[in-house]
Length: 285
Image 1 (cartoon, rainbow, N blue to C red):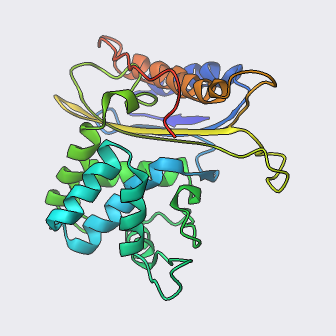
Image 2 (image 1 turned 135 degrees about the horizontal axis):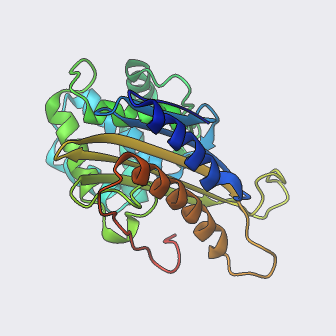
């Protein structure tokens, strides 16, 4: 765990409180946080690769906006909105294929998405070449770079129209999918979020390290009213105890993320009233 800040005491407090938040968690977790007004950044194992699950949809969105220079067709707009706001997997697959080389339809090669990653400096992200976008390998560091891109003012990769559109969609994510890196965020901030989750199968061909565990990820940006920050938390090996309901691993991952999230926002915005996200009793498929 390492934090830097224009406020030395804040950096030290964040390091201690984040470490405490993760101390008793049995799963693996990585994070990257930045807050522009205070010049603060924190990372913990931020270069470790994780299965993206639905946070890959933010990459697809960024690539689409990059390739179209922010001007989408009516059909593309509808697909992008379904993909982000409703986390629609079919819409994500359609856009992934649109941004791919389809010489082998069974193995769409996401060449146009790779172009975006190269331009965005997201060099540690590894796209899945078999078309399973959810198995794209992401890092907390690269996903934080994407949040910096969406919330920044640099037009070299995405123009202001594209950045505003991406944030608009992430702000409109349905209420039952606004958990995770939003927990504890100041209520007077504008919150932009995307979560992702998947459970690996129990099949013998799955590595024993992954078998049956949950991958649970969340990324959020805060804007307006003086706020300008981003937080990414990626987790895996959220286990389901034998004989227990399958959603226990999913819940455990969310609790890990939200414990860290609340600790960070409490330290950086000590006078703010925090957001309490809701979530369904079980994950959507």
